[in-house]
Image (cartoon, rainbow, N blue to C red; front, side, top):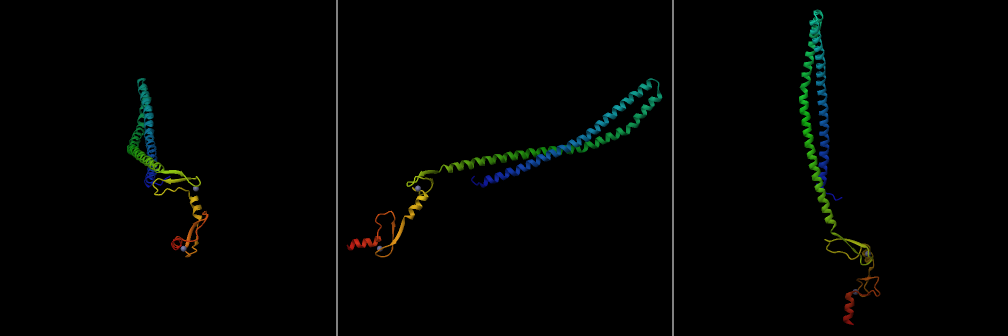
Length: 221
Ligand SMILES: [Zn+2]
Ligand SMILES: [Zn+2]
C-alpha cells in the first residue's frame, strides 16, 4: 500500500466522525429514555385520575339512585365519599401538571439530539465519500506507475530483468551476471612501465604491456 498523506488524513477524519456519530447515537437513546420516563410519570397521573374519576362517577350514580329511592341517608353518605375524594383528585391534577413541565424540555433535547445525529451522519458519509474518492485516485496513480515497469530477458542467462521506462539506461544483463562479469576483469603490472594493465580472464592472450608502451614499441620497431 502506497503511503498517501491525504488518504491518511481522510481516513483519520472518517474515524473521528464515526466516533462522533456513535456518541450522537448514544445521546439520542439517552434522551429517548429520559423522555419515556417522564411520559410514564404523566401516564401514571392520567391513569390514577381516570380511575378516581370512574369511582366518583359511580358514587354519583349511587347517590342519585339512593336519592330517587328516598334513601337520603345513603345518598348523603355517597355525596360525602365524593367530597372526600376531591382533594386526592386535585392533588393528582397538580401532579400531572408538574409531570408535564419537564416533558417539553426533554422533548426539545431529544429533537436536538436527533438533529445532531443526522448532522453527524451526513458529515460521516461525506468523509467516507472523500476517503473513497482519494482511494480510487491513489489506486489509479499506482496502476499508472505500475504500467511504467517492464520486463526483458538478461542477454547472458535469460533471467527476467525489471526496468522502469523512465530510466536513462536500461541494462541488458541481470545483476548477478553483471557481478560475475565484473569479477572477470583483473589488473596486472605492465612489463614495460609497471602501470596497471586491465585484462579479462577469458582472453586467450592477456596483454603484457599497457597501451602506451605498446604504441612506443610499434613506432620504434
Ligand atoms: Zn543474467
Ligand atoms: Zn606500460
